[in-house]
Length: 301
Length: 88
Image (cartoon, rainbow over all chains, first blue to last red; front, side, top):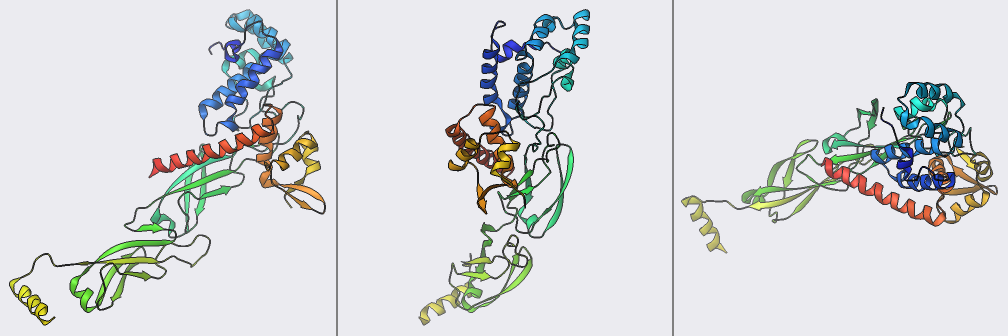
């Protein structure tokens, strides 16, 4: 339980007026308020520390106690007195932030002033005591593979030690945010809980290029099938399909395979398309006989 | 209906009516009118509470609130972009 120098924390002198303490506190509160520093644990810690300092120093009674015993809090008698006196400590002028962990003072504070028994940290701004306020909103990122969003599925994950089971809808897309009302931080004074926002981070683990709901891929086509037509087996995310190749299919021709793209979010049964672009491959080597036949073809022209 | 009227807001949060109106004028809160009464939807309440805290506790005026909202949006965008990049 290290001693905390509240004056140093607020950057004021030991003889500072209450007014100056409040001013210094307000400045630091603006800097470290968790609302203004989203997802910054360091700022939250500092905010709590300056709040604690303000709780003590802005109240003349507690400030006097702190000045008397603070530095020598290990001293038995003074410590005991502080313990006995803590019940008298009261009133507050601090600010709030409902993080769900409001009230976790330093050990030092707890030993001097009895933790949150004497103070009301976490309550709303002075003057509106008794109000109900919503808990903090939480943000989380859920990593998914592209193949995970082809079908609706349930996924369990842990946030702040709590297991949460959510339904990942088919067609969930990268960067999409969903809101789970009431899964955020605890409310204050019986207020509602905050909300949990989950952002999907979707990694493309397929050989297809994604554009909206459509998928794109290049497929090699041998010279003979391109010239004469035929069939080609093409793999899709939903299994292999057999495509009919038209005779004289040109290099770079794109065919559209309906409904083999990605599912459309919130529109069950609706899918994007798969676009296949054919790259005609020339033979890399010819046998003597093949060469002869090609020459015959050439001479026919 | 999950909504709270302007008058109720002013009463519950112990704020000035002018402050509420200024937030509306600045486009910082979204309200809707029904039978001549201005309402705030519960969805917007958390954001509204933050603005109240910032104004009354941190002594930030309306232009300051506008700047904060814009910058926070930016931070959140950048943070989510950052976390997305880290995961790919």
